Length: 438
Ligand code: TNX
Image (cartoon, rainbow, N blue to C red; front, top):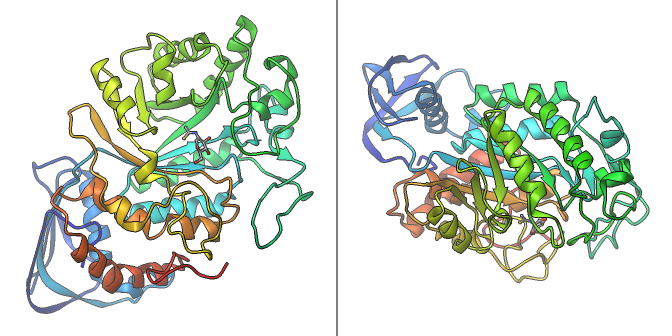
C-alpha cells in the first residue's frame, strides 16, 4: 500500500490506534533508510539519519489513510500492524521544474515541494532563466528580473482556447522568496539545485542588457530554440560570474546548474569559464549533456543526460557523475496518450507505463535520475498537476524502490491506495481511464 514501494513490507494481523507519536532512535544502516514497526506495543522507528526519520514519517502518513493528506488531518487513526524496511535505491531522485517558460507563483512552488516530499523525491532542479523569462531577482543587475521577467504575449498555444495571444505573462522570485523555498525544501529533505542557463536560452537576459547578446531583441514570445546566444567576451562572462555569485549566495546546494543546452553557435568557452568559476567557489557545475561538446570541464561537473542515455555513458567514460533524464522516458511535458482530448500534443507519447519501465543504466557514477517538467504548455498549477501525476508516482518508484518491479502490482496499488491520497491533496492528476476533455 506504500508508494514508492519499500524494500520490504510485511503485514501482520489487525490494526492499532495511532495518535501521531512514535519512538525514534538512530541506528547504523543505509543512507536515508529506516525501519518501522507497528505493533500492539506501539510505533517504533529506527532511522539511519534525519532523512530516514523523515521518510518513516511519510510512510506513517501513507499508512494512516487518505484523510491524513487533507489540510486538516484526522487526529487519531488506525495503522495496520506491519514491519517496514526501507531505503532508496538512488541518491539523486530529482524533478526539474521550468519556472521560466511559465512563472509558478511561490505558494504553488511550495506546494510542489510538498508533493515531491510525499513521493520521497529529494532534488528540485529549478530552471530559473530562459529565452521567455528571467525569474531570479538580481540586486546587481535589476533589469534582469524587471525587464527579463515579463513578456508581452503569454504565447500559451492551447488548441481549444485559441491561445492567449496578446496577454502579458511574467513574474519573478525575490532572493528572500528563494531562501524561503530553500529552507522549506530542506525541512523536507529536498535540495534545491538552481539553474541559470548559458550561453543559449538567454534571450530574457539579452532583452534586459542588449550588450550581452550576439544580437538583440526582446523577451522571446515563441517556443523552440532561439538562435541568439550570449557573447563569449570577457565582459559578458564577468557579468555572469557576478550573477552566479548572487545565485550562490541564495542557494547553498553544492550542485549549481549552468544549462549549456541547445546553444548552437554558442561559444564553448562560455560554459567552460562559468564551470571553472563555480568550481573555484567550491561548487559542482551541473549541465545538460551538450556540455560534453565544449571541451574539458572540471572533473566534478555533473552531466544531465537528456538526449537518451548515450551522452550519459560518454560522460561516465570521461569520469563525470551523471543524472539520467532520457526524454523518451521521463519528459513529463510529453503527452500521455494519442487521444484527441489530451491537452496539447507535445513530444512523443510517454505513458505512465513508459515511465514505470524506465531502468536507469547501472554504474557507480550514475547518481540517479530526474523527471523533467518543461512548461511551454503548462501555464498553471492545474496543468502542471495533470502532466506530473500520476507519472511522477511511477518515476518515484523507479528511483526509490528495488529494481525488481511488478507493473500490474504497481498499477493496482496506485489506483487503490495512492490516487485517493492525491485526491485528498487536491492534485488534479490525469485519470487512469483517459484524459479529461480539456
Ligand atoms: C528541450 S531538454 C529543452 C527545453 C525544452 C524541451 C521541451 C533541454 C535541456 N532543453 O528547452 O523546453 O526540450 O520538451
